[in-house]
Length: 223
Image 1 (cartoon, rainbow, N blue to C red):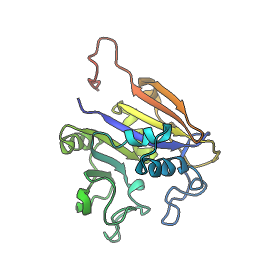
Image 2: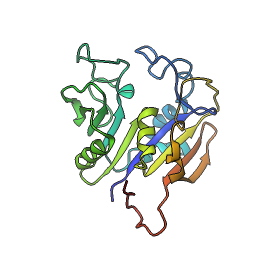
Image 3: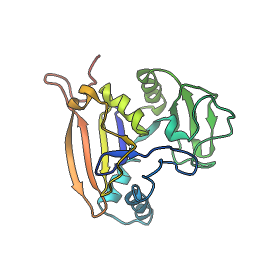
Image 4: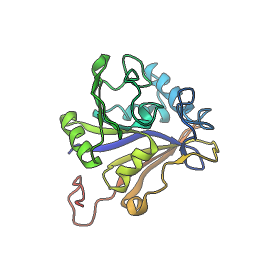
């Protein structure tokens, strides 16, 4: 059964995944750009060079069997409110790294955009369950990944829809911004830590959704 997965979401020691005042010259917000994602960029380079290691393994897992991605508008770009123009097509240039359908949550839908390499951005204000259903259909039997940001991941966690969540915890203190694991209510009770390993650069925690007693493994809870 296809899964909904989250990978490579990096948080500081005090739990922040995004800073304040995200904008064009500060994609992750103030106070968080320096150093937070160094482990991932280094691991991506090592992976491309054929090297191995704990960080490289987690980066490699993030690309395995993914057929569609879901993200929030904050991950797609720095602009808020109605689209003043539709020239913005993401942070990633003409050939984004996804190479499959991407569904962008926004209160201001716009026409879909097709990019080089097979990435198609679809903009939607539908409920998360409807977006997830569209993503599963587009993934054609493969898993779906949530790319971010924190608020979008929180919505799916609260609803108990995330099957697997990989957190990378790095030795930085940020002090303010968006915490990933805030505002989850009872949603966090549905998850348990299945793996915890460290490299010199990051501690990796893999959370999985608990299977209720008597339920079939892999079957999503009804709501």
